[in-house]
Length: 521
Image (cartoon, rainbow, N blue to C red; front, side, top):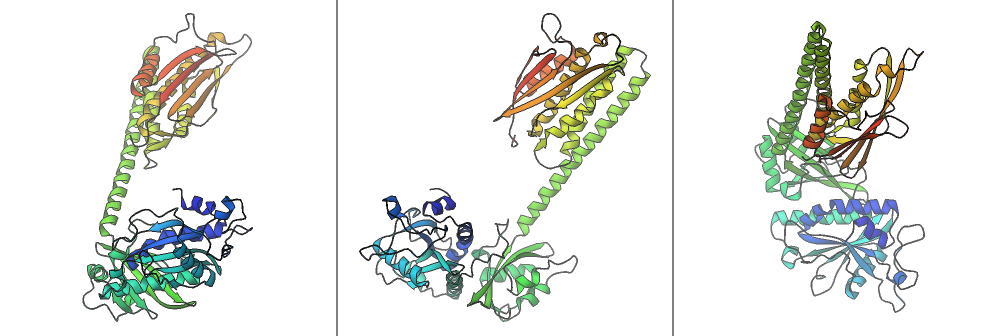
């Protein structure tokens, strides 16, 4: 089956606000299923008549949903399952996936009654899965946009333990809010969070004043880990928690709202090495707040691991930063040594080594600025190109241009690719624009080198082109150290290929074709 949006669109529910509301319901209904020990099924009016050539049901001209009309024979209209949720706290009533299933006649009658009368309806059926089932209209802005049904095993409907009674009553209150259009709350922070509290982690039920009416065994244990001793029920949760927190750092301003259940927010509290995640869900009836549900979870181990990851990332950035600094020191030493060399050949060799060390330093500089395993290769190339004018003579003026974007490149490929490109650009300048080619009567020889990348899937093609004198007789690139370095980097390190060829309009092109590794390598 497709995504919820696709299933809704197939039934004519395309209003953006309605679709978002149903997404929020489905995003939070695992909580209700677990509290209910029950399966939850979401139904939408099905567009059966439209498929048969009629006008259909379920969608109005504005893209919303109207009350589906009964058929000509008086039967209830069709409904289709668009989402299904099973409880993690008990066994399921539906062993098979129900999404896409059409309602039976008995189910249609129940769903239509809840939809048309905009109230919760309890099934009078004697056979599963409808025995004891409840149909809840999903209301937004005063309109019913879908129907939710709750299906509970017979043994769970009359839960005898105190925990089960509070669980089910909490779920019933949330279902009543759905029928009133008060849940989910649009002001609540959206999206799942790492360490999000779940029903089984700890449940605390507050009354209107913020006193604890009930705390599940796991909820009590969570507060004990924070350092609380003694009874919790009957006490103000805000007083209990605030007395456990050492005021060593600014407290989250949402904490009082969460601890009193006045706002649907999430927060975390710390006491020593213990970190507890809290989520508040205010309970309302007819627009009046009557209490709140607080979910609590000990996330100390999760936060400890996150801190370790942050520490590791910081260490990696510092490592790249120090490597960059050391390479720049080596480059500076090579520069000093080159200035002392009397032989032009020796000085040129040291300057080439200095440039190669400098481009590796550029790669580590970029890696030190982030923690991702991929780097913005355009930044590396642009910094590398700015190093090459140092090689040119005052009588040579070469313009360097990058004509497209490389995008993100794996750090495993970045150093080899950067070195290869820098060598090719350097060779293009040194061999493509000899001063002997300078026109008579001109003080400066001018030229252009283009770097043109193109990515197709997981392959990268780069053309380094110049408008210089072109390839020497025989068509080869030569056998110097720079060419050997490029061949080794491209064919061995990057598992790619390289080809030199004449450029249309004069000059030379070097074509690189390499496969790119993913960021997981």
